[in-house]
Length: 195
Image 1: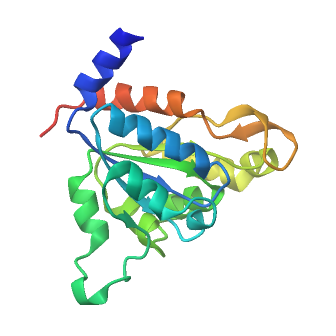
Image 2: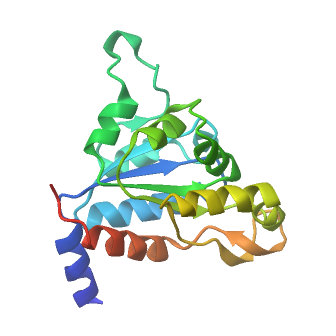
């Protein structure tokens, strides 16, 4: 374990990771992921959808990262500076966890109606999605088509995993565990030299 941590710290030290949090109950797991990234030396910015703030408060992520959390791109018009572009320029990787059916559909179809969906259209770095939703939603033809379209465009996926879901059923739809998402992040960023 010490070897793995030493390797990941060397890989992530000073690297800029942008974590997008969309509105699903699995958002609570994202706090553990963000904490791990920070502990491993990454500089982490968090963008939340309005729906995500109903599951986990922005203060949680602000405390973990030491950075402001971005929710509304028009929150402070007197100091507006196009957050979606500023954050996109800084990021070396974007991770969306949980990635709901909503955010997958928005990105697949180029819809930009909030800060996270707008930012996803403005980045030119790797994007890693960690889907989380009900098994029937994950298996719906529209969601499968959206995931396939994103995969064909180079978006990477980790999960969803099999198991008990928040709705009380079991099946494929659980967000991947934070350690599994972290492992994918290390793989992706280990192959990209910091500019």
